[in-house]
Amino acid sequence: MKSIIVDLDRCNGCFNCQIACKDEHCDNDWRPIAAPQPMTGQFWCKVDQKERGRVPVVSVDYTPTFCGMCDNAECMNAVSDGSVYRREDGLVLIDPEKARGHRELVDACPLGMIYYNEALDLPQKCTGCAHLLDDGWEAPRCVDACATGALRYGDVEDFADELDDAQVAEALEGKGSHVLYINRPAERFIAGTVADREANEVLIGAKVQIVDESGNQVAALETDEFGDFKYEGSVKSCCKVSIEAEGYEPAALDADTTADDVVFDDVFMKSLA
Image (tube, rainbow, N blue to C red; front, side, top):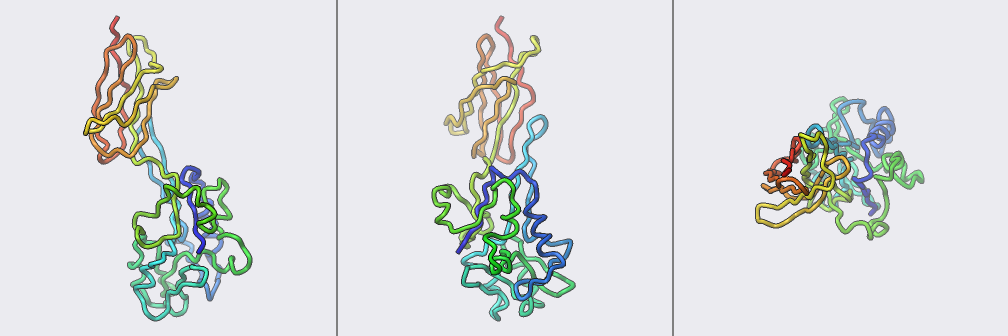
């Protein structure tokens, strides 16, 4: 069974994959694989966008989302009439004839990637572009359209040396999803700018230490040439941030990353002179 490998470090939010999927399936009838996808309301390939932080430190994460073609597919478990089936190559498909009226399949998918076509009275989802693979294509349209290499398609064994930290979509954990994510962004970040208000200058090379609520140091870094620092990690807790710079009184800040990232306003250090 082949898988889609999604390298989130390479995804820049161009939406080529989402557009290519629409181009391939909207108003195109690929039965017996799939009936036409409607122009609006369905995204068999969907790029989720999440804004993080606040001005002046804002980042945007992009996550392409697809049907996982799961080994333990809930959509297959939801019906017993063969309207959802698995091909020999592992692709899980909804039969566009047998599945008419099976509205319950929409709720069966933990990831929410099955849609209902009201006009055709039919549940629909990603097919892995099975019709193209049968015609000799080496990858689905979404992967073929990716300009940055964020999407790749192949046997898991071909990517074994890259998958040490691979994850599946949270909603599909334990389902045997064949969409694997690598290089996920850190869950939280703490950022700020250190400066001398009186001199109207940023402080370069100020030492920043971040300690979690258990007293363990999770990061030690220095401000860059713009006086900025940014810690990216997985700590979801109340942290202590201490800042030291030669010739200045130390500064201590609280950073609660339990629910969200933390961006400090300018941290002004008081000169000892």
